[in-house]
Length: 222
Image (tube, rainbow, N blue to C red; front, side):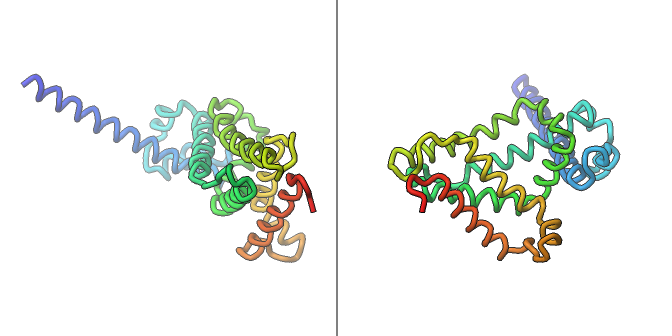
């Protein structure tokens, strides 16, 4: 009898925990969309709770404040990118192709996740004051930098890449080329009088970035 009660209690606890996690996930998903669309100031608690089909008090219960929720959203988008990056098959034993793979991944990821770009734009306008309060932000970026470091190290050992290259600098160069192209595609299309918001333009840019970066890192630049 006691065992039956314990089983029922454990089952009941598991159901409550699952429901709580589902509510939290729903709030995060809604907040990501709302903040990406309206920014931090325009992304009100009311809009988020309405989108998540929950109550304002639940947001405060799980995240403490609007700022706490926004930090959780930023951590979430970085985590998802980190997880996608981990699945990116970039073999450091083939350093030339591995570097190309990282570039392709970054350009493609930003293009397919405009909400990621919008949220980063919002946080940069706020001078990074929220992400600086996250304990996880550097954890996610360090994975990518370590991968670049391994690729550069292997390339240098084999005489393919220059020695002494800084992995962080190469990472920043890749991210800059990827992020800028997506975040400024509308204004640059108008400025240049030629749309870059299409697959063909993206492929051309990808090829150019790969060629440019390979010239930067190669031991014998042509």
